[in-house]
Length: 233
Image (cartoon, rainbow, N blue to C red; front, top):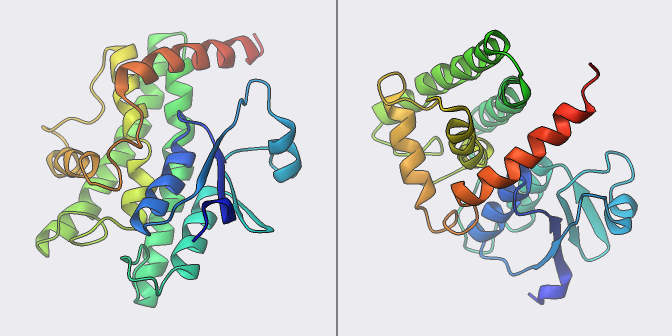
């Protein structure tokens, strides 16, 4: 397929852009990677996603798709017969459960993580990161069920929808640990999840896509300062 038929507008630091890049790699698709400036947002982004004004934005010819979970599902459906692995399960119930857990991750993980990053006092930071740890404990139970069936990933013996949905955040977790001097993914509390994270990071579809931790640390510091400055005092 010609590269100019598929375009991805996103940023290197965005976990949601990462999701789509991993899915594109799994499907073996070539695409034009268009880097969004974001600070300020480009005219292309505002025109492509006038509703949410957020990345990523995926273009397939004249079709424009927004929101990373929707883009990943689109890729899986449109290129389901190209010989590449499926991302979502074929079974309807398993597919529903995969969607449930990704929605849970986005709902229960992202906001506490961000709030913990910008927290200016120890008590507030601890409260938010305790919520993050609760999510990890819940996902530990989910991955253990997969491990009981002899599987390495949430998606079985290959990475799937939940793996992509959660794995896109791993670099942000590592950067947060460095900045705050804490341990969020702890092998004493969530050993299966730590093992999963290590396997996910070296998967061919993932390697080179997720940001390098030290580079992300510098970005996150600036990101946090912008959030702090924008928070009403």
